[in-house]
Length: 69
Image (cartoon, rainbow, N blue to C red; front, side, top):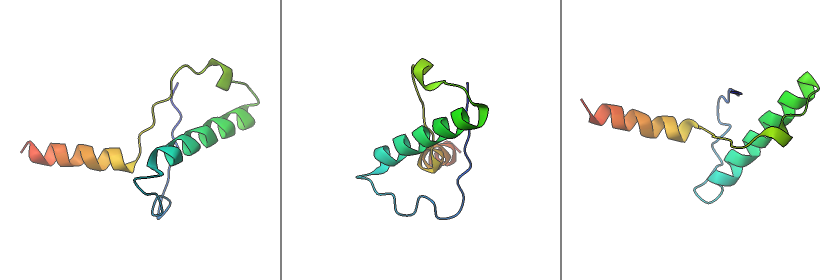
């Protein structure tokens, strides 16, 4: 299953290296909460692994692509 949440603007501007992983986990937890609330189902008890991708990961991937030219 994949849940995508669009974050725009300055939503991550206050995230630092120190709280980056905490914020990623908080955001993932929030998305699962919204998903369960909207669909009125429980998925949290069945989640084995969560992979979170943020703008930081995309920026790192961009640099790798540019470096391979």
